[in-house]
Length: 341
Ligand SMILES: *[C@@H]1O[C@H](CO)[C@@H](O)[C@H](O)[C@H]1NC(C)=O
Image (cartoon, rainbow, N blue to C red):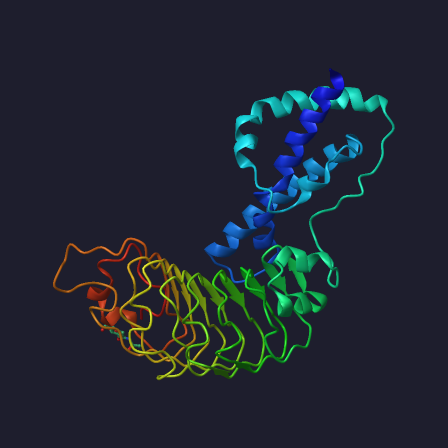
């Protein structure tokens, strides 16, 4: 009887360990350091995750070597059972501890989290179709759908497996993004190319990515922001060389889920209108904006229009006198930050 309960308890624990928080870890590994809302959210998630994982590890240590292999398969999501059995877990866990304390403590050989680069297993995780992706995982670190290639002196985007959801290649020497670099990556949600030497991007390099939500191109030498798909939620092109023609007309108009638009430290001379209603943050510090129009944020023909979401507009470091256009902010929850003298 005791053995039966013990096995059941373990099964439930392994199921708990098996899936959802692993995705939180992907977010945490990214130490994206702009002081914005996204950052705060990510850190919070990550923090919870680590606490959570400590707990699991401890329990696994105590419960000996009964863990069946298939339970560490990351694709083995079983959150239903997890929810249903939530109460039992606690109870069983206590039982377990009592029983196991009498046994010898052995360390578990299974550490499913990080697959080391070069490990053959990463290819399996990425799926059999991923020839190029497999080679990339010899060089980069692959963790489920995330590929981490930070600080590897890369001069181009490595071949990525179709299953890739998050791609990180920060602090490399990539100079150009071609159309073929991200072709057919239909699951790709986040691309982070912070601090490379990118000066040229093919205009259709990102547009065909149906799942792309977050694109981080900070600290490059980009003069022209390429066309982006309607699925975007975060665009960060701070510290580049975007000038008056660097952003296409109505570039952000058809992005109904766009939340964060960061264009700090460029040479932009106008606010890129129209801005989608979903937008929460617009950072345009240290640019060359001199003019504001009454319809930049609000609708001069509809005084009832309120742009609730846009709480964070930064225009400091621009040669603009915000006091000259008080009518331009009446629909905003907060006045933009910038020179009011
Ligand atoms: C800014 O605009 C206000 C209102 O038009 C004006 O009184 C003020 O002198 C301007 N400041 C500068 C530095 O131009």
